Image 1 (spheres, rainbow, N blue to C red):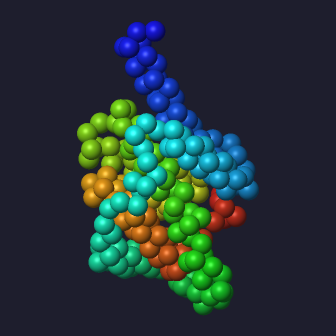
Image 2: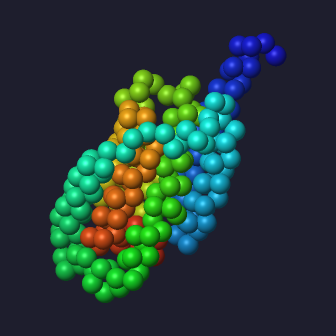
Length: 218
């Protein structure tokens, strides 16, 4: 096989991986799988993504430790997320503001403890280093690639069938992707994602991210 043929084959393989991970799987979860299978499926996809990332030429796990965290920006983003979340919950479910904090603070504390490790970290691995490093050859210039990243991040949350979730995850995806790709800091992206999750669940919007509340429009 010639070098151009090998390159074309390699690019086609990457494109198939990309389409499967970031388009086919989210659509399958949203349209075909029952809500009870969402998290086992996400866990399986995360394992596949980690394996692919490990095999990515030039990638080193230690690289994920590099980069500065702007803690002032993290705090401001957390406060902004809390303010937006509070406004949204007041509109869609008045009276449910900070419901979990008021009714089951122990559960909320457990969510705060586990969310960065069990939710934010796997998502960031899949949607930041895997996306930008393994599939760099498929992506356009940096800033447009960030928009695409936010779009597929939002698509991954289609399974909740909520336009509010879609908008919030797209906006969050832009911020997380910019922190990783423009600021070259995986810890910064992870910290931003963690505080956003804390704000969402703390203010009461976790009701939108609970598989038991999913109602498909068909």
